[in-house]
Length: 430
Ligand code: HEM
Image 1 (cartoon, rainbow, N blue to C red):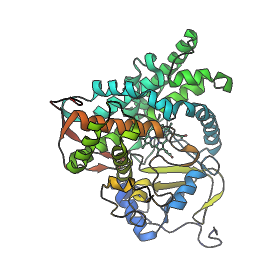
Image 2: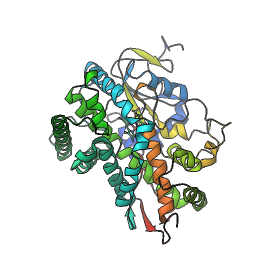
Image 3: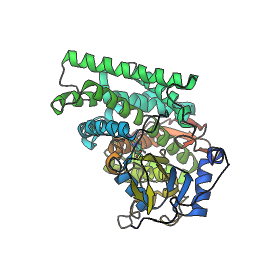
Image 4: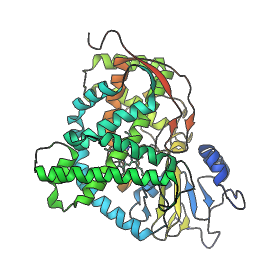
């Protein structure tokens, strides 16, 4: 690809307010703003002097595939001076832990957790008028703590929930606050993070003392890989990272699933028929339509709808030169609904995933990301969502709202979604 030199240094983009730039308009309606700019400026535009937004599948994929090498992923919701060396060192440490941890998250291990998931689903997803996101967060909080720590999970779901709740208001504002900022929001976040990390330290210490090599959970696997040279600190940080990632995003995805179930009785009937003919804890092969439905909901409503990277070293993307510390963003939501790649893009059509001869165009469907920082929980997450959908339609009558407002300010969530869940009078299989 040719670099635009010696022409303009930056791609065109909206100028915005003379002092605040585009922040105000962006924060008022993030998705609307990005959509308008894409329409007006095309596949690459400047948001401000240090930030570009890309939209074509190849640019998006290049950004993700070249992460760690040319770009860096930042996980903290707090602002700091952009320090690419510190970020690169963090990325290296994380990546070496993730190489080991990956073995504890693949499909076979995920499957071994399915029976426990069923019990947790029964205990957390109850009868009556339901705040869907809160219920699904409780379900995934317990599921992820159990998967990672099994019998040592006591107190962890609560600490996790508090940490997730404290991150939420920080990630909703594009004005990132530094860690020293004297505000309740920042203090609440740092306190909850420290509490969770202290719990992790305690659990790792206890497990090491007990010296029980038989524990069949993620912590057991990480400790058993001591020969790979993982320090306790690495293990604690990795567990926290995994548990946070395995709570908010899947809970949000399941909330969108409930939303679509409420809106589409035709789809729900077909899902219920598949659920009735499958076992209580089925293999995914028994649920092809359910899996297709989950994929389609993740296309329409990807919780991680906006993904960003910091430029690590001088490089180019989409023909534009980038300097260390620049930011690059893309909207997964827009990619998944771009009519250049998808027919009838705004409509839920699970069937589009069932025809083996029709695959999405290259790099147009990335609900789990791609490249070296692709989601490590892809298989576990798909299994959890598919089984939970089958249990929802098998166990429950769902009544309730036809509409909900999508909220793009943090993760993409249906704002304040409430539905009625009522256990079916005749239980499944009877
Ligand atoms: C079920 C729905 C899920 C969805 C839609 C999802 C989506 C994603 C996406 C898009 C990313 C990449 C973000 C980026 O590139 O910046 C990601 C990263 C990640 N996900 Fe998931 N995820 C899901 C479930 C899970 C589960 C169950 C786990 C844990 C077991 C998990 C653990 C992670 C971790 C640790 C990362 C960061 C990876 C890294 O930076 O190296 N996710 N996820």
